[in-house]
Amino acid sequence: MPHRDLYLACYDISEPRRLIAALKLTRAYATGGQKSVHEIFLTPAERGNLLDDMAVLIDLATDRFMLLRLDPRNKVHTLGKALKPVDPDYFYVG
Image 1 (cartoon, rainbow, N blue to C red):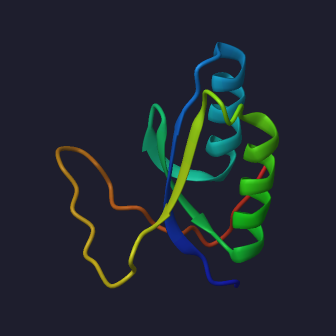
Image 2 (cartoon, one colour):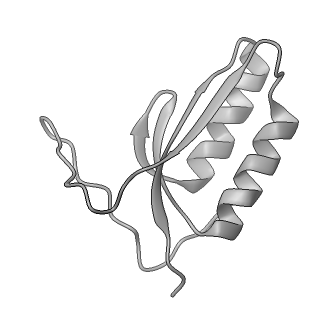
Image 3 (spheres, helix red, strand yellow):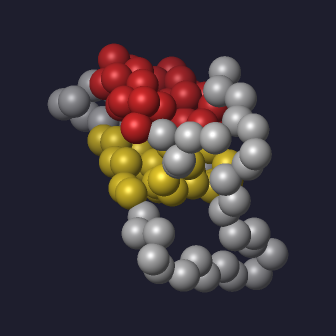
C-alpha cells in the first residue's frame, strides 16, 4: 500500500459555482473535515492531481486554496465527538 501523508485542504472561493466544485473536488479525497476545511491523506501523485485540478477550478484574483502537510510526529487532538483522522485500507477517488 502506498504511503500517504495527512494534509489539511482549505479554500475560500468567491463564486457559488466554483465553491460547489471545490467542495466536490476536495471531498473526493477527504477522510474528514467540515465546510471548507478537509482532512486528506494523499500520495505524492494524488497531491499533484489535486493541485492541478484545483488550479483549473479557482480564479487566482479572487479565490484562495491552501494545502498544508501536517507533521506526522505531532499528536492529533480532537474535541467533542470528533474522530482522529485515519488513513483507510482502501481509498476510492471519484
